Image (tube, rainbow, N blue to C red; front, side, top):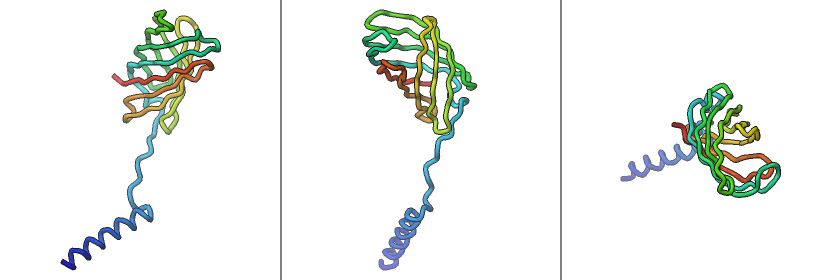
Length: 145
């Protein structure tokens, strides 16, 4: 019985010492690039425009966007602004940082540019984002198809 306690204590000290001195494996740091966003995503957006150059009021949208892995995107969406429905064609550009955050700028057939900051999550299969235009308080998610 003493031998078992000694062995258990020895293992506990070895594990604890390893953790204390950094011998334990560290979590992998994500490495992303424009290629990480390559593919087609379904997305949803919800929020409010509070002013600026944007029409004030409640905003919701859903659509499909395709990123080419080289910094370009295209897509379509349907937007409701205060209950007025708008269907748009989208084109734009994006960049992805090594830490899996990024920025996107796109325009649509109504010529209004939209800016978004995003983060790739769920093993790069999803994106969370926030619109960064002055007067916009909208967020959303996109899931890879």
